[in-house]
Length: 149
Image 1: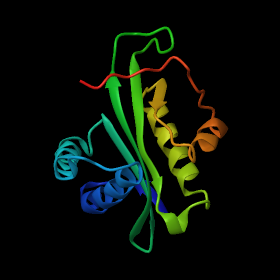
Image 2: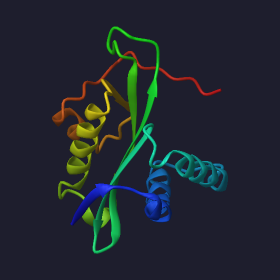
Image 3: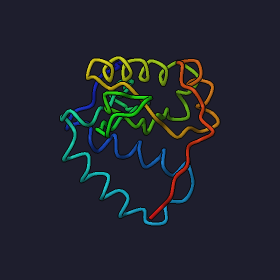
């Protein structure tokens, strides 16, 4: 098993896993647009300081992923530096689940985020992922809200 940061050569395989993950969350009304926009984002940001992707590969097949988008905001009481990451696409393909791959990728991602100066990580979780996030120290918040524009 290989655990490493993704690079440009991983783009197509990562996109396939991302689409599988997104589809598992429900129907994607604008599937082609979602894929195109995601690919454009990845091409622009992969290898830069504002995007981090770790992958697990088994004999060349990508079987688990973890992505973090890093951004700056005004300093917050909960994050005086203002450097925050949004955790996305923590996903393991079905036949490789419950073997510790997501935890390994999350730990690698969190270590690298800390090294890059990120002081707060946020995420939307699935019910399956909740116990792992709790194990790693994430705290649930009842005060989170969102609005789609």
